[in-house]
Image (cartoon, rainbow, N blue to C red; front, side, top):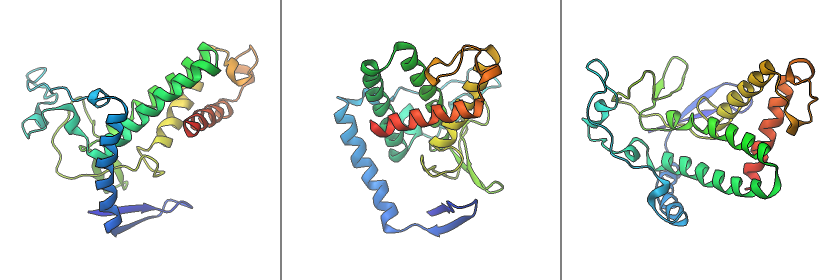
Length: 224
């Protein structure tokens, strides 16, 4: 196993062999996952439905490729550490939603939770056992390159806060910018951010508004 380190001051990457602390982190994730499941009151936190074994069409494999290699349940598509990352985000979102119900108006709460939900929807594609290493970029390649999940023979795991492709920051940045740009085209009024009734199109800079969304969502998660 190799560990890829990214220079926080630039884009330089460094590769090193795994240390005992790296293996310990993998083991600790399994322990923490068990604790989190117990905290949530059972295994319903982790989806583990049976994967379909048949092809959706004669020329479409769907999930049948991985099923033939023994990955017959949804939960098996993720390592324990990846499952822990996904489950922790879900746990925090539930806590945050409860807090927002007592502190913010309905529209604002829905807006914040929608941005978080859409951003989090990208995570399983980048945090699964079927991601591969792209040596050209070089970076981790997300699992779904097409409308099917094929078997892969290498393994690349993203650090959710590693500052690289597939991490949480890149996802939240991408989706908040898209949300703001979509609102700017419709002339919607982002009342929560103090914008005038003219909307983003004429009076508000989308990049400024998106940075406000990121600060609010990141601050809310940190406080949670």
